[in-house]
View 1 (spheres, rainbow, N blue to C red):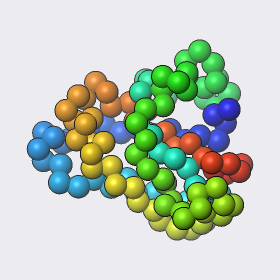
View 2 (view 1 turned 135 degrees about the horizontal axis):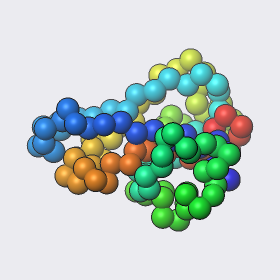
View 3 (view 1 turned 135 degrees about the vertical axis):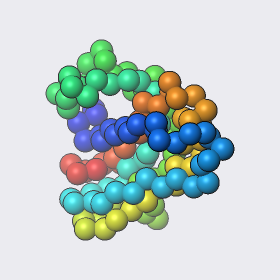
Length: 123
């Protein structure tokens, strides 16, 4: 069930070459406390105009092929399955330097990231 997963993508047009990437962080703020989430590269293009939480479980999204390389843990909790591992109101960051270099080397592979919670209704 992908009902609590979060997917995000962004354009990389402003970065000229993989050689220019010294460091890259994906920063985000948690609004609702929840379990930690594994962060992966997304390997499938999802149409942001038509993909919703109600239809992402359909033919458009196949977890076995769409969930790619694991980047890390969103909140870096020592026990990622613990309730409240991602605390409300906190800012978190994930080092995505190697992922960005990989995506810039092959721009057609830039489908974004997917956050896969370990449990709970808020991830």
